[in-house]
Length: 129
Image 1 (cartoon, rainbow, N blue to C red):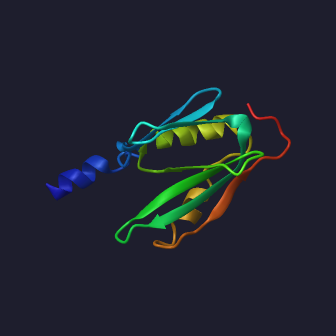
Image 2: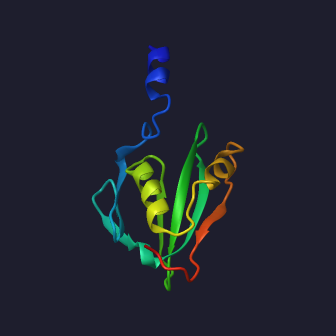
């Protein structure tokens, strides 16, 4: 049974995603975060000032998180890799934020159980699509 489970998850980047942890939905205007209790928050592409990547140590595993800083405010929006739609959002970020790339993933992942905080994207005055 264990062998079957490990083979069935191999290569599936969405295997950790679960709507019980929240849902992320991206469109041409930005993205929406829906919490497990149904609360919603929206962030437009043009309002993203910085994106931070880091990990939370959950004792037996790490949780990769992204925090979005909203321009001109003290507001932050945090998401994580277990939220439904996380990998689709990563694709949308590459399509809508000039210069956003996934080169940060390995730096954030390793070493294990370290926070590995890094600013992975910052707005410059280039137009966002």
